[in-house]
Image (cartoon, rainbow, N blue to C red; front, side, top):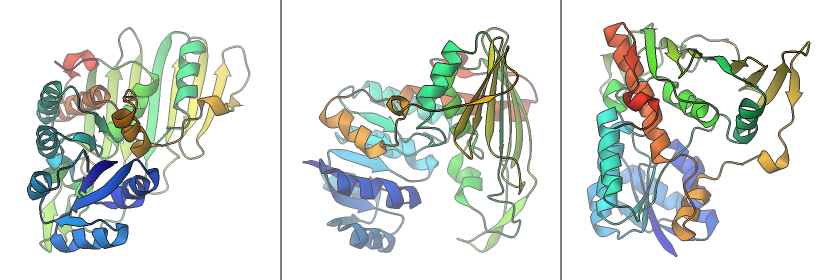
Length: 348
């Protein structure tokens, strides 16, 4: 049985990864390291974890693990992942992959030095059960791609008096902003990669109280963002998003081709198809054989135990969405078009 440990037992780890490890039967959850020894012990007590460590370095040195799940903030992902690889462990990294493209590329280089070890990134869950159907419709029905429009407005942080959340803290997330990387990761499952972008953003809520210091913290990452991208050929991408606009529309992706339009409603998870000779959009039922449930831990263990290929999300795909996010970040500062590293395909 595989010995597996968790570094950073945040909400996603506590609600999904740890219960799935316990339930799977192919791995034994033997160690945890959290932000403090006290919080680590609370997780250890809840999940019957025998070993609790005060920090991740001691964890890697003493726990002798086969696999490590990293659930820390993005600024720590790469350093911990590289150290875990060097300790001989397989690695599952929580999304977002890294706080900068340079860090993501450093992890890529480390992975190349450890080709026998599995590295998987936790996938965005927006459309996991509908992805195969969406990809089929794009490939079989759309014809030439003309444009892609994604609208993602939510009110997660509409309350201006709410305290600073780590997702708003550039010290923790680096170039990652709002749900940008997560949304583009989903588009990568259906569509080609953009080759260049231009972006405009605004920081609407300019400061929040940091609960760790009880002082006001100035915010630098936009909470309203518009991105225009160019695909290879003539097609364009338009993304608009915010986290401070309450009562916004449901998250929606519209994909327009010369022969058809495909619409994905992110709230209902419904897919609609409109052929150019039809008068209206019709609902597309996802067939059972194309419905792929979320199995993050299961797929991670499949890759270790059965040598199954990593499908969601591969390091290569995570590098692509990181390169996209990096180009958007650069465009916000330059005010102009920025090339996506490696033309949006293989970051060099």
